Length: 295
Image (cartoon, rainbow, N blue to C red; front, side, top):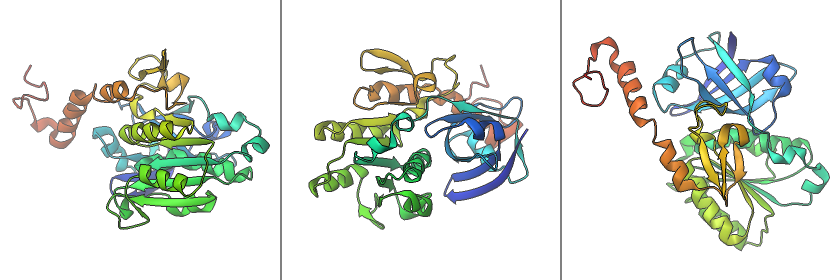
């Protein structure tokens, strides 16, 4: 069992947990992910590592309530435990294998959307620890939905919050902030964009036009996390890749986002059935035409 040492609500439907997992903490790197399972019959949930403390033996995860499993997970408290906590999985960020001195010569931009701030944070923190200042744009619908703001400000060279409703920071989408920074004379050598699939798609359309190489994380389409189910299969250029074993990070200008977004819809029916079961328990016996209980 993997004990939860801290459980905190960051924003509406967004939660942070510190989990005791010494072996994972010893070996993980920015960009990698874990798979958590609440009980023997629980769903396997892939989550990108938000932070880690090798000495304390802890891993920090951030997740959003999306379906039945994440709603149940949000009800866990400090002192509770996960049955399984598997990792680190996936490939680390390419940056950590590069010479820090060569990275210092590059101007790097990180763009996070919503919960995407969580996987961006350990990469920016790694940069800071190696003396590399980077620009960070974090976007959300409203100020209340911005997460890890103080942590991100502490490690970013320049921090630019954006809100869709214009109540805080830059008013508008992260793409308009990228355009503004470039217009102001910033010349970026590389961009890392992590967030909702649609956000990453439009960031890549813009950076391709601006000729800024861009890395994206395809964590949103992962299911099994070990390459066995094929749910995260996607086209990267002319090649077939699996997000969980070949990624989760890829060249964003080569990713077929339209195909990937269709893959996100594959399990909507199963998710709906699980939600009905969670909400109505044994009182729901079919007849709705959606859950399959009357088949």
